[in-house]
Length: 394
Image (cartoon, rainbow, N blue to C red; front, top):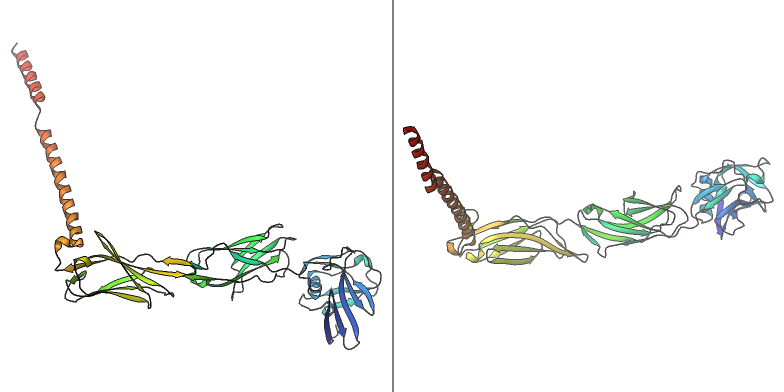
């Protein structure tokens, strides 16, 4: 086809294309007795007269150009055989071949009809119409989640004329993360994003596509989610180097440090001291990846098992890590009677010794009974022995 300079003007339901060389005006419209402007017989205006297009080699790529040209969404189907009735006048074109990317039908390759096709072969198209944008919501009222959780989105697509495919997209990612098909009457589609990772943090939207059609609807509104990776903290302590590990000198100072990564605004570390007579809690804001709890005067009350945990409030939720491994601390020089760690060891040892003694006593009594015959047994044996002797003498 000869290259031409074209001026395109949108005029309501039709499109005007001017050939600057010949000043021939070309317009496209869809003729339909039902009045639905986005489906009908393809009609072309040129030479001051409306005519039709032959359906030979007419396909969805050609139809897609017409639907786009008329702002009618996407091509859903092609129609031939004068499906929408016959138009008096000329059949202008035949063998129209569009790539599908042209802005107007006049830009596609074609041949003049020259009387080859009749109106019995008029081409028609069915367009979706302008697709409305869907709406994306979340079932949870919160916007923050921990790793390995699942978030449930709902995409509402107000288009029920044909089956659709619904896609969930993350901003910056070209391929959909979740795809779900919907039947003819289903407009609300649930999209589950499971086993969350920190890489899932970001902005999400949904769109839908009519099955069998290459075009997408406009994107929905966006929803932002945050994914937190809460790790179990590490714990250690510092004390005088003169004492062996697990001990501190009475009256001296020592420090217990909690650490974790990553950090989030508003986080805090909690230190739990577990003792036989109760639990003592300490808390410090997590202004850095670690915090240090200082104890200036070690006493028996500082003995026990220390555990760290990390806590943060984010997106309307509270996230708490698992507790660290327990750290046992004994105070050297403290009254052993008051030492919870020593008491724990003594009670365990005493329980073991008492259990062993009970087992030995039971075993000894059983063996003694087994060796010593009862009074009835002795009398029975004497009676038997005497009878045997009497029988022998007789």
